[in-house]
Length: 385
Ligand code: UD1
Image (tube, rainbow, N blue to C red; front, top):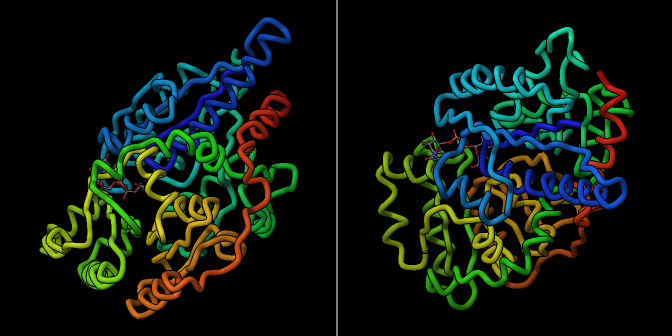
């Protein structure tokens, strides 16, 4: 079987790592049993994220095979970025004609490649009409259609053939949208597979020495357009961080979007000069995991970090009004707070004074999601298309 996987932006890479590992293990088992490998895995990088710190370092840290193809699309408006990925991806798909196309998450690369695959027509002589489309991390919904990722999630799920889901809410959402049960597979979380596998290595990272961090600290990430693209939201958020830093030192690896905007709004010096906020460039996977795992709390508007902190048992203050990952609030360490400064400060205070909540790890977040996914793919793909 020829399986093609798409990687585009930073949050895709840790998910792809688990898939690549599971394919490798499956092939190794097959060589032992029957003398041949079964899956040829082709990796296509769209180039949506292209900086070494946002992309290559993840491939190195996680041992992901070098992409077979890089579409090198780079940054642009959503329309241009999606259109450009589609335009450049179509000939690659027609050349390789994989049996299955696997996409992860909810970024622009995810929907762009799914859309191409759903409409492609392989030549009549080919074994199948088009690839089976597999979406990993399907079914998540924030019910907030102002989020570009929500549009990407809804559209990708609606044209995928196999939907692999991380938590029960995803199954419920897909059923509510009329997706038949035989397309939906609750398998757990590939991002947690990668986290489990890398945690020991991450502990050896020397990032704390490099940035001279001693004692307790909070870790901050901020990049969601609704938070950072206007001065009206970014300024109070940065001021709140400065207030929090008076209680606990903050480490803030700053996303390029946030840095560019802060500079444009003349807010950058505010945080840069704050003595208890340590700004860094975006960090590699192992360095960031090292800092997350020993943080007193994490303040973020990311999707994936809500899940990683839940697995690690680290309190997470999420600066959003909604989450597509409700299990992290229901059983995990996540506090869904929004961007009201008073609420953020109160929640941080509650966490720092030890009044946290009892938590547990969601079902199937056990390091074996990739194995379940590949197991299901090899038994199903030949029956589809
Ligand atoms: C994208 C994803 C988002 C994900 C985030 C993680 C979509 C719709 N959004 O948002 O879901 O959480 O990645 O980072 O796909 N830039 C660089 N170097 C890079 C990449 C980007 O400098 O390697 C800068 C550019 O100025 C670019 C801006 O960051 O315009 C935003 O990048 P883009 O990929 O458009 O969206 P993200 O905000 O990163």
